[in-house]
Image (tube, rainbow, N blue to C red; front, side):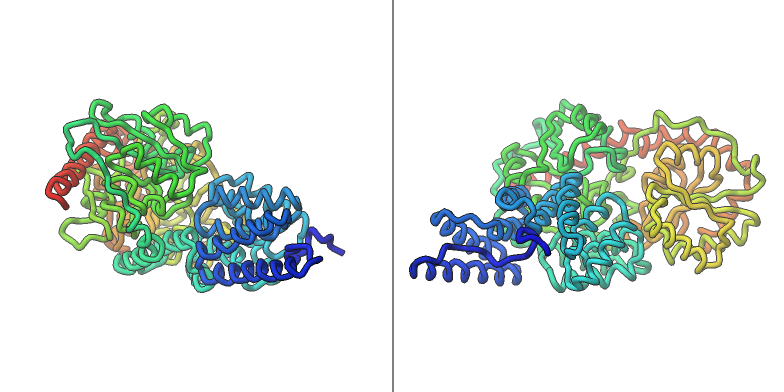
Amino acid sequence: MRSASRRRRAPEWLPKQTASNVRLAHQVNGWFLEGRALQGKGRFDEALTLYQKVVFELERANVKDPSIYAAIGHVLIFTGDNNASLEWSKRALEIDPNYIQALINAAAACRQMNRVNEAHGYAQKAYDIEPGNAQALASLAVILLNKGLVSQALVRAAYAIRMLPESLDAIGAIASAYGRIGDVDTALPYFAKYKQRLPFDPNLSSTRLFCLHYKPGITCDELKQAHKEWGDRFGAKFRSEWPKHETEPTVNRKLRIGYVSGDFRHHVVGYWTKHIIAGHDRERFEVFCFANNPEDEYSKNFKEGADHWISILDMDDAEAARVITDAKIDILVDLSGHTGGHRLLMMARKPAPVQATWCGYIDSTGLEAFDYVIADEVIAPSSEPSPFLEEPLRLPHASVGFEPITDAPEIGPVPALRKGYVTFGCFNNPAKVGDEVLPVWAEILNRVPNSKLLIGYGNLNDAVTKDRLLGLCRKYNIPEERIQLRGGKRKAILQAYSDEIDVALDTFPYNGGTTTCEALWMGVPVVALYGGHPMSRFGCALLAHNGLPALATTSKAEYIDRAVHLAGNFETLTRLRRELRGHLVNTPLFNSKLFIEGLENAYIRIFERWCQKRQAGE
């Protein structure tokens, strides 16, 4: 038999020796039940008010019950006050260390604050106490997914949903897991079911937006509408809270630039931004990093590169917005978009007069509080309607700047000369490999006899991820002996470009970015396809700004022909390995000084525009 501490139990509100206590007990219980009902309708602030009345009356009667503290911890997750949620959950656990709902709440709050190891500890304890508890199992599934353990997460979420079909954590974990591996057709119905049950969760809705970019055939207009719906649902209510900025309306002073990210750590976004943040002209700019991530050994690069490092990880959105407003930031730049660890709803409060999104997510935020998406002419051609809800801020060259890889291995000779056959390679996230691109790759392999395909990525040791790719290869009649799937980290990937890959193939409709630059730095040509929305144009933009437009194609047939032609031209492959790296260092993409100059001039331009509006009384 389970102990009382392990069961879901009715609140033991008040001793009932007197008639007055009985009446108060009924009243308090009524507030509690009404709060639960309001919470179920998404009226979280009203529910919180009632729960706080319950606490006040109980503590006045010297009664402490973990259920009300856990209830407050639960509702605070939905208001975005994760730090307070954790504190209330801890209060419940002080009374009963094994109170399941409090453990699950604590796991969720830590998860939202990117404190994954703490979250895992709470979720694991809940599961250990009660392995048959569907909520505990689902909570653990979400944590495992956040750690990249897709197979383990799916197994636990599947068990949880069998026991409790309406478990939101389980539904969300399954949606996110299938989205993470690129199985959009399976993921989207789960996202829809979650949204139907809980339309107020901005984070899972962000995950859905991210996953939509994997969907074959999705259009710019569909993506714009989806992002607008997100902004209207979650961000519009903060419009009334926008402060009146007392910023001095002139560019004839040092401008204060703030960068907000959950990825000031060892992460691909770091490869694009570390040297930019450190390289700003300190005569013209003062640089702030507002970090929403736990620090690792890589974080010191950002701390040393910026003038100010401010952690907002443990701040709720309102507090973080106040900190940024008090810092008198002139231009605030988001580096996350709708990726993990974002603080978009903090920026929805407009803590800076000018706000832009850049680098981490090549699409709209959906929020009226954002003024610009930093882009370029290839991603957002000025001759076409804007693909963004925000105004495109087109840089004169590339929209990003990649830091030369100083510790890259030496570039070896063309591998096919040694091996006797051509190897095509792709080291993009395998979620980007789907029904749109694999038939094209199958045709390339058919036209290049004895050629092979190497697909590599860090999570390819995961069983579900690997099985999905093998299943897709079978679907398009790619013999298993002609493909190789391999997990690996950056150093191993760079070495593979040198020793094994002759021609790299970009994915579509969701292009690669870091992997394209890494391949080019190792002298390996990358064939890319220009698509219909910004993320499907990034590969061609990188090639164009590296002076390699011939590798950017506009149709699947052209993509196939270009790859096949390169595979048969060892002279060109040899020349690229010999000359490409020396060429790249003089392009805007790899030349930090040139890129930063263009970015800083753009910053001055948009702030000057704000100053003119301010002086005109707008």
